[in-house]
Length: 57
Image 1: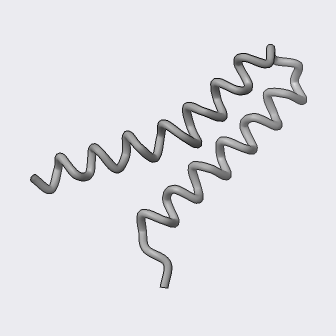
Image 2: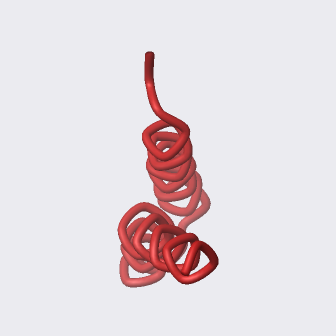
């Protein structure tokens, strides 16, 4: 069975990719599209994990 953390990370990565594609399709500047991809797909799961770790302590 897939853990809750894995499902949430996968969801954030999918949202990041969809946001990147939509931003590119709408003609947003490349740094904006890449920033969205990195912020939601890369930094988002890390922040969520750290927040959870601090809540447990």
